[in-house]
Image (cartoon, rainbow, N blue to C red):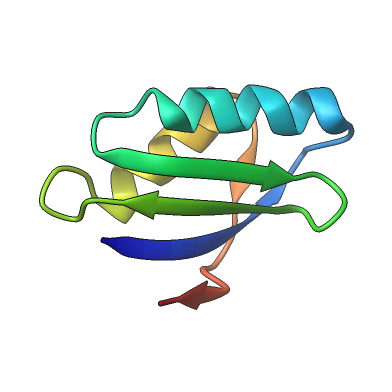
Length: 74
């Protein structure tokens, strides 16, 4: 299981964060996703055998937000 913090531009409210969290949680292989609009960050736990960072970034863009360089991986 990989844990990744992805900075995200374009979130303006808690509704934006909820939309993004929900969309990422629907991606096959994602165990958990929690977006924080104040921190402009989404924390994602995922199974690297089923999904990669590229697919997560595509899902973020599909919601209308822009992922930035990875802040931290654990």
